[in-house]
Amino acid sequence: MAKIEPIVGRYVHIDYEGKDYRIYFEEAGQGIPLVCLHTAGTDGREWRHQLCDPDITKHFRVVAFDLPRHGKSIPPAGWWKESEEYKLTSKFYADFVMAFCRALGLDRAVVMGSSMGGNICLPLALDHSDELRALIAIEACEYSPGWWLSWLSHPHIHGGEVCATSVYGLMAPQSPDEYRWETWWYYSQGGPGIFKGDLYFYSVDHDFRGKCQTIQGKIPTYFITGEYDFACTPEMTQETAAKVKNSEAIIMKGNGHFPMSENPQNFKQYLMPVLEKIRARG
Image 1 (tube, rainbow, N blue to C red):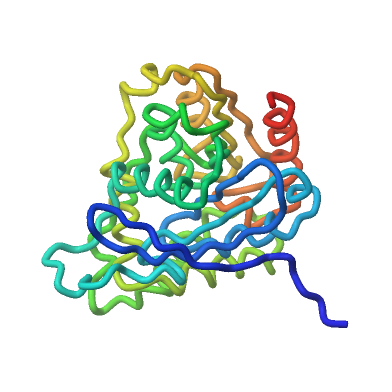
Image 2 (image 1 turned 30 degrees about the vertical axis):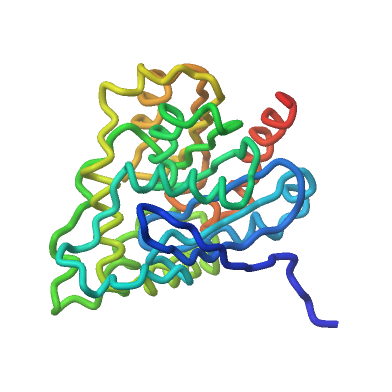
């Protein structure tokens, strides 16, 4: 018998500021909604290991969606007429995450994101905590400078291979080759200018310095970072968590910037206790 994974993929249409966005998402499991946000320049495939893990899906409805222009979520109609290059902003990102949750009727979801998906957890904690249950901010901190690279769109550069190879070193050497190269593959397939535009949010638009202290802490925020991450170091994560009320910093041994895809078994050791804490809170 062929092995069939439990993941189901569907599309949902989301109206945002007068534009129709056709958004692809995958889900598995039942229980507490757990919305997973991918890293810059990639898509929801990064979460396939968690979507297929029965220990996670037994109590959580795991949902991973592709942001507009990423993966199977194509840009809105008329994108080719836009005069400005694509640049992801904090406002659009946070608003769209919440619009997605509302469109699917996800009641008090847990949002779990990595890298730029982890950074957006800070604006979500500040402005949308009334609609959420908890936040899991992976490889996240208040400010991640130095990653918006203007030369990424140069015509002499093979965008996919350069993007993929530029992030390969962010993974831990202990992570299995199979999964490190799988992560590399995801990064090699982004649309033109998408990785660069995401990095605009990651290193320019997302500057939460001076704002962390204003988060009320109505819901718990769990910061999880790999020891080999040099884009968002463990020290940067711990310093950020110390400023956020009702938060906890967790540093993973033997993992890097893409824990859910580069070393899912290692990541699971740190994720499961967090999920149990969220379940225990009711």
